[in-house]
Length: 153
Image 1 (cartoon, rainbow, N blue to C red):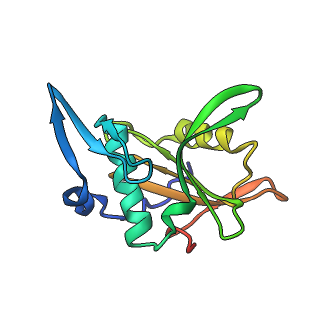
Image 2 (cartoon, rainbow, N blue to C red):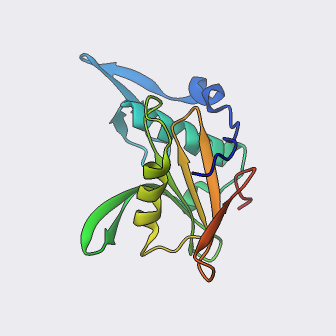
């Protein structure tokens, strides 16, 4: 990435909103979109915080957010972390979530761009919970530009 400034989403403020419980020795979180208990892995923690951000701060419609949606990329099955659809149900924003310990380097953005191939969303985002970047994709110019904020829905 070309050294853009990370977005300051302050996702940790949504931690108290997470519905958590312990099953045996596993921490579980109630998935905000799928409404089922999930193992609270670091990447899942980031995903749930981002979903709260999208719904609460950005006012995205929860019914237009999908989690771990299957997509074929060059014939191989993959899963998107978060995919948001616009009002016409077109893919709008693809988000790749990483654990907080994973640095957001160029390879993470490339992974998200690779998953985006068949979707062609106008906005692509990567986040590890501490840092987040969002880019507007210009397919005609085969380029992208980093944005200072998450796009309005």
